[in-house]
Image (tube, rainbow, N blue to C red; front, top):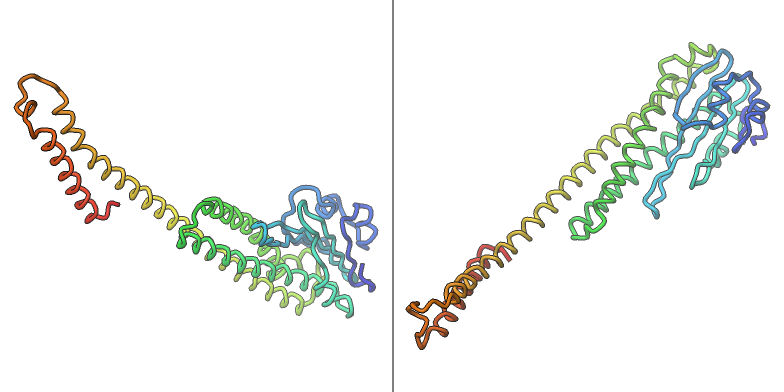
Length: 300
């Protein structure tokens, strides 16, 4: 918890603790949002003398190739900013150290506390997309080095991560845009001054850059997926070519053996002294000829 009244921080609080620390009257909808019931969805809206926001902070765990999300809720009044952090399943809660370094040791207005939090969230999205692009490069290198055993799963996981990032990034951008276009100011007049709204414009620009970068990442993973599928198809074609060549090589000896294995009495070569050697010579020469032919065609 911050020392000054301009910012208070709570970790996994109850609804009663939130009401006590908020310093403003909260309705049922706001308490439900802040109490962490339901799937967190980024938003920012005003309520006469205060504003309520919810942010989702992405965290990339490189060693485990996964992304999880930290929920940070926010109440901004004219004399206080309250942040509510929730511990996600399988992860750690949002670390407020960076926010403390920016806000706690100085008399920062509540509106600027909200800006600094939103700015940290935007930077985390930009960092996450950089990590995502590095992972895409690693998957592409695995294809080039013929280490494609688990590539399909990694591509599927990356596509799922991109979809989930998009589902959280777009609402975050829309939430910040509500501040920039004045809707929050209309819902909570004089809660944020003009300078603070301008600062939120910088955050909005970062989120737009993150959204554009995410679209590029989606195109990159689509390209890797197409390359992987073409590589699988090429491998299958090579296998079919080899099997066809082997079948063709075995076809002629099988035909010769089948012809002379009929054992009819009136076959011209049946009692020929050199018939056995002749049949072997025909089989060997035909087999060598086919092997040379298929080698030149690079079938195997």
